[in-house]
Image (cartoon, rainbow, N blue to C red; front, side, top):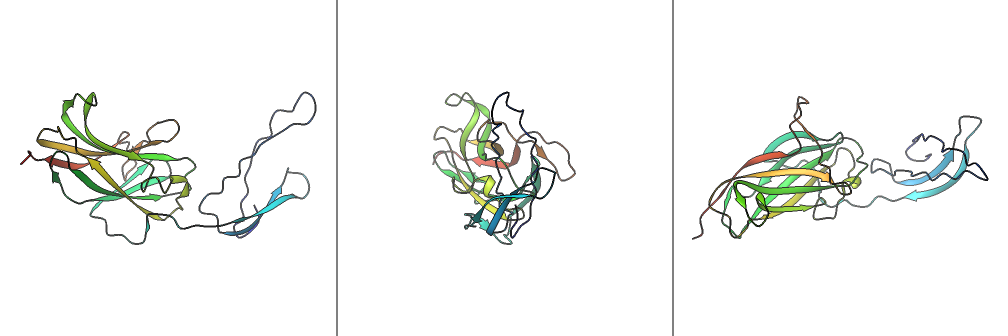
Length: 218
């Protein structure tokens, strides 16, 4: 790519066709760190000068949830996978009643361009078995970030994304102490991203944020 941002992308050639012309489809990943403007596409095979194939205009649009210098109540600085950091979170309250919702805001930042789309799971986990879910899950919300509006592939490295979630508390949730848990998983394959601590230690595939107290019904 030749334009406001210069970038070289390397691809292996496909196996040659036994008859006729060899066909190859190349996916040029237009990551959010590319500058907007007019770009030209050249093919360089390693011999001689590049051949211009075409050109296009790259237009940047506003990203929902992008914030500057946010005040984050609970700092975490955990890395998910290789390219995403969970900076921390805000929690409106640490207690609620069955049938209410938990207001949680997560703060994400891309370390480098993210090449896959991921969904965020925000859940309320307890120690008692929930017959409705078949496990100790008593409330959850899972979707792509910022209520489906800001896929992870839109994140420009360094930009902070404020990602709000409303976790519904099951109306039949018994009173007691629960844990708010967060994870991120692939939109296509459902595989969870591993979580790493500030020192690089592997913390599993989910983050336990804090305790949440479910109060008895009035």
